Length: 553
Image (cartoon, rainbow, N blue to C red; front, top):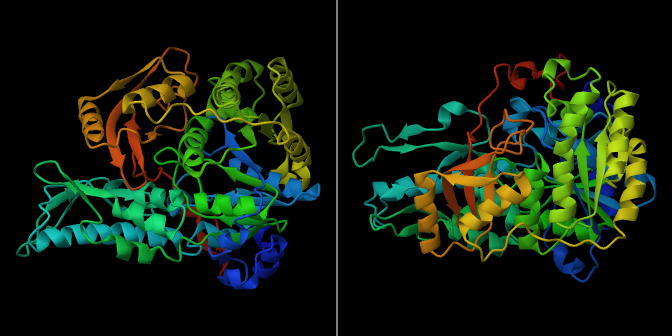
């Protein structure tokens, strides 16, 4: 049965009933139909003195192209905690339309561990990403309009791009203003996918509506001839952009198929952005539940690193436990086994790929100082020999393991993990960052590359060197770094799966995000506008004869 069919066959509870489970009052809820709602930020005033619950981060090893079921694991764990009598809440990212119609499909979990209504969440949901797209593109329109009417600010170079919430490689670089109308200035422009927009990063890192407006005003949209930065505030755009986001900033409430409350809000990618849901949603969940399950995108080298070094630092929070998700197929994939053979038993490939898991666990446990458990997302083609081999290998390194079957069994398949998480969160958890903010931009990038990726060093192209110098001269050298890198490898080469030879990270470009308050380092062949695969998921998505959506997975 397809995920969409499983979701549709499950009877959901009215959203008001879900809200009651976590003590949200009727006047603090704005329903969007029967099964989804927004939560008013006024609730934070009422809850400000309430003690925070335990925060559990779900991350993973470097994934295969279709992912390793991190969201499925997070949902299963939240349901499993409810099964053993604990008050759990999910705090997850919103899916982007690009992957839904591209290669990865939806991002609402799978099997019997899903959040719902899955079609709504995977498509337009409550309109948050559309609002972000509109705010981004209003700023673009105001920039070109300012230039059209005389360019009083002296904009010489525009660095702000337009965006769209779809994968479309044709839009990476475009020429605009070709109408030949008087005063229309043609220029080269480009599009990012909406989830890579700085507006999305700001949206997820802002603490309230005032902080959102402040950060939007600080966005640098370009430079004068004298290389002086020009901001969105200089264009008087910050007020209008904030208005477009005034409803979106309120977190969204939905439920799992087992009626566990889920707060779903914000959704930057981790390979091209910082990969975490909004600080507002996470902090709200911490006040409403006893166990808060959140996730960070892709492998721990990307999502978890940025969750810890950017989000936790900004929000002044830390996880009480970390779940590192792995699959036997992904471990064999990182052991050099071809994709077409990956369902076959192969202990040698599994052993070679095991070091990928070991590196991530070592980072989380020994570099960051956190409590870690490995959760194996079990597939039907996993053999007993492979499972037992992995169990023994983890025991050698004193690493806790849980075998999880939440895709097939929902919360019932995750109760072992839930019990172990309850025990793990009782232990003291420290958080050591990978770098300090007072280090130089290069020192911070080098620290992540060598400590977390295992690189022997970092190379910088000349353009990146010049931009680092400019950023530090402008006084932004104390910001955290957000490294845009492939998710498939610890290196910046997506084909270097085993990382057998020493490698270096190559930084091609540096982008200052003065509103979201971090510096982006572009490495390898990473793109902020993905393309569709040869056979996109869009080809299989349709309506059946009854008008139901089919093909979303």
